[in-house]
Length: 56
Image 1 (cartoon, rainbow, N blue to C red):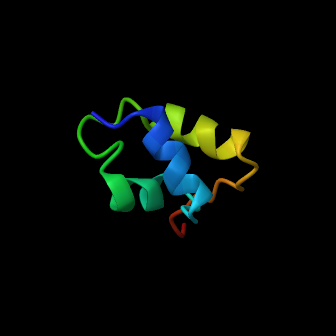
Image 2 (cartoon, rainbow, N blue to C red):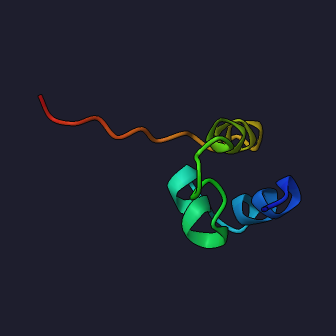
């Protein structure tokens, strides 16, 4: 389990989105249930949340 403190540390050192956080510390890589928390922490830190849209 990854703590919110660790996620915040990754954001402060340059993580730009939930996938970046996952790559750095494995947060959100199992069931995905904490992805909304990661997005909220990114928003709290003022990081723009990038969303990928599939081409139609």
